[in-house]
Length: 216
Image (cartoon, rainbow, N blue to C red; front, side):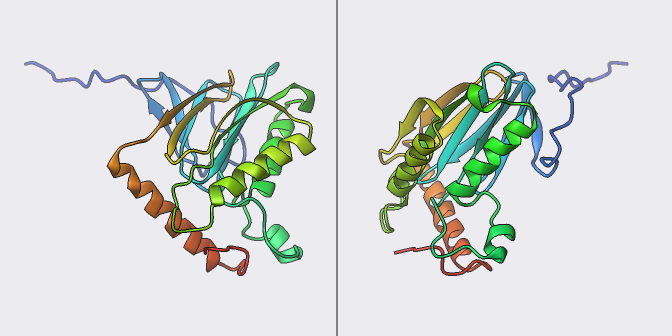
């Protein structure tokens, strides 16, 4: 009798995600020989393992931050630079997550530091901000201006940037080494990303934090 076996690569034993990231899906990528995590708008992820963090950006911006001495790093993905109007106790604590760059940057940095990173050893790489939502305000440019201003104000070490243009991007980041790869998405079927971003913006405009999203 001949037994048929599945010879596809399988994931070896891996340590769990850092506390607080159990809700994000991690899967084994045999082409990269590591666990992979896809970060969506409003999310961020930090790791001290040999993992790959990936995302697709249109007008959104992602910051990839890495401690060069300790092998700890992570990525965020935000659609809007800062909330409009005054912050009250509700908007400061409920439902904000990492949707805004101001929160996304703080949360990513603070989580890296809590995992053992040191601020003086952080290197930052920033991506995205394409003008892919032509019918709307240039949110991509606002995101670019925000993240550049934030990095300068916080005196962070910016070592790489790929920003602007009119194309979406796929970004891959290895938080343990700090290595990043970027691919411009030029195919017509990538318009699906634009539709996803428009839907995300409309959802933000109608969630409990009303009045903070300017669509037109």
